Image 1 (tube, rainbow, N blue to C red):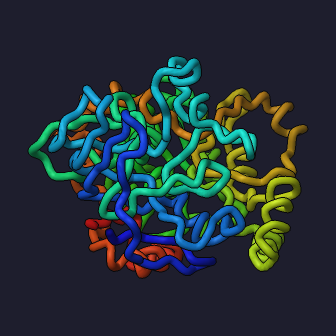
Image 2: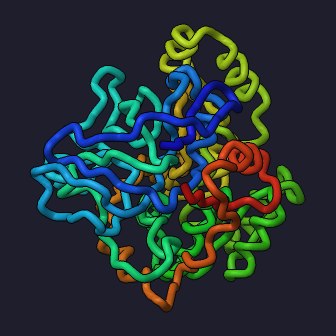
Length: 394
């Protein structure tokens, strides 16, 4: 089969690789019909190379048709249509029963002290082959795949794999009061969808902050009060406070993460690390790695006293300095973590109707064949051509 594989920094290729096969009695094999390019994939493209091997299959946002089932699979049949969550979670352990599927005890990566495994995402999370491919082996066939009905185009359901539950959790963790104000930092796929969900769930004012004109216009068209960070610069905090009665927003969602703009020192350290031998680089990143914290520092500045910050952007530094004096003084509540996909499925499925309140049907800005994935990664990483959400057709 064809699959998108990692070969080095800024080097991903569509290769011919062996087809996946049933390995355990509860496995299924899915013929992928649509698969997404996620902002988290750019971390693999840019800085997380020390935790990858050449030939690793990337991608964690697939859906498709069940091609084959193992002998213990009773919940699905060949031909069923499914979305595959990015968490590799069993659905039956203590953590899964708590709704913490990202911490699944069955798939935790004890070698690295990490939570549950993820599709297509480094040795730190199990090095499980990903879904930017023609076929995907999926374990826990009775409990992991999300069955969806035939009929509507894939765009209606594919975001259940990651974008929708990640954005929903970001808003839930933000604890926006009824008719309260939430600011979303970063209007890429997760930030854009989080802004839509916050409005749907009753936020009185949704503020969006970004530097990309196309993303700002896209959010503004859905009623988001947008601020162009390149225009406001270090005056952004004053501008947002002025728009929120002088206090700042009740909640802030950081949908940017470790590769924020405006942190040249941390960026330089990340770039140097990528030049080291993998064994040394991985040790440094696990013990002394630092993130670009511009977005998180801005969130701490913006949020009102006693407010809540929700982190959905990925952070990976082990030595990140944080302004704890300010955080303690402002009595900031902080919540974070990988999305627990299945925790939010029952909330999200009723919204994926013909009414389409979250605008999933036209959420994608680019639909490309898998053969064009290397170009799409570069385009998305450089924020070119208005790219917000890219879907591939294997």
